[in-house]
Image (cartoon, rainbow, N blue to C red; front, top):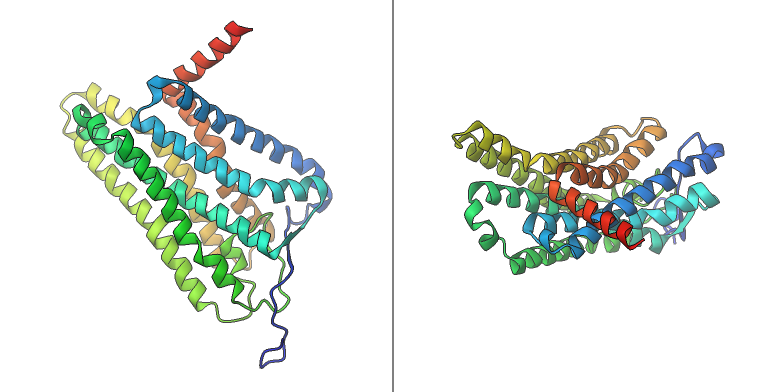
Length: 317
């Protein structure tokens, strides 16, 4: 089928993914750090999930939200694993059109869920500091599970139209992506038709999720800081702020790479492809690697839970 300009309009049967631009000959060696990264992600977040599930002492609001965060990070990583390792280990650079949309949907859905969980965790910290005596009465298990369900459904509902919108666009033979996985900001630059609807809806998703979530996180920490400053003793202030340290690290680990990747996609179209690849990898791999380490070290309940688990396994041996 041809458009009025005579150029072919079609949906490509496959997209071409790239690894690290300029280092194609070294992909087999580059696969080693990627394999190690995935191992750390699944082992670290899997340990967090196992400890929280099996230790009744950790069935508290803060730890249940942490379990949701770990689950979201595992979901993002599992969504990228097939194509990333396919490229670096086996040289498989093609992904079918439908599989690409499928991967894009899950990567962004889990990312939206991760952002929502970070917001829920900031509210959790505010309630714990502002009204510690009613903390567990306010954040009951049914409310926590309902919140998790709503966040998951919101992610799915918001992302569902994007694959359908992309299928309505002509690609005119353009099918080479900039990353080892399918991301909407990358895919949306390939069609040769009018992408205004896609851009508007994409902007709506970003502002109603990441934008709103980050704003409310800042508001939550403003309220936390105001509450902490009202505490009369210095020891009480330090204790209150220490409970937020891990969450602040998680927020920075998530939003700083995201902002950097957004800036590169928006203003760095003429930058080196290597920069695009490195920023995308930092956005997807840094948070799920660093968060289990931070929470295992800085959150004493999680640290003690891991120590108990290892001690029990050692005793069985």
